[in-house]
Length: 157
Image (cartoon, rainbow, N blue to C red; front, side):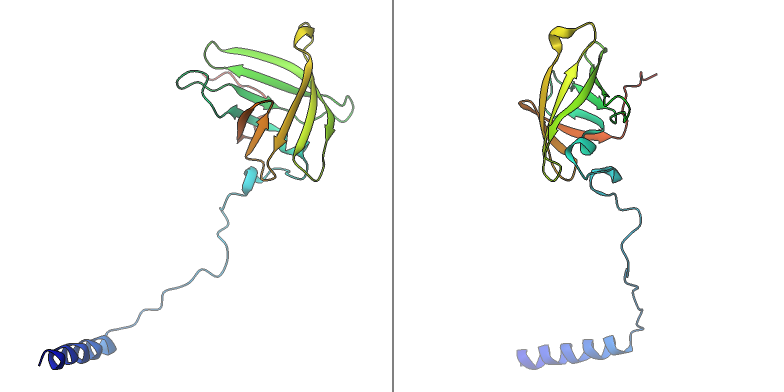
């Protein structure tokens, strides 16, 4: 009797479903146009091109504070770019020049020489391992993450 009742319910529901109006649900036949590209749509072809932009140290230096770095493109005439370091705790902005010392164009390794006019004691090499998607990197012994395409610090109002 129980099996007969279940069978009857299934038949009734199937009959109701066949009389229900059908609506065709459109399917997406193409990729959405506003899908962000890995790395923000910038040049990711080499480690030095992936470095250009605004980065911040992943680990906080104090609760809520992250050191930020800005790297400009290399000037084709001088061979130099600008590295800006911003410390949000006290608003310190430190601007230096940098040049590419070496890189693995098809890989992730980059070595730059940073020179700070007037502060030669800070002149040194900095080594990076920059992921191919351009979103995270190792800088010296710590890790940084890409923020946006700004290449210099702007004082917020």
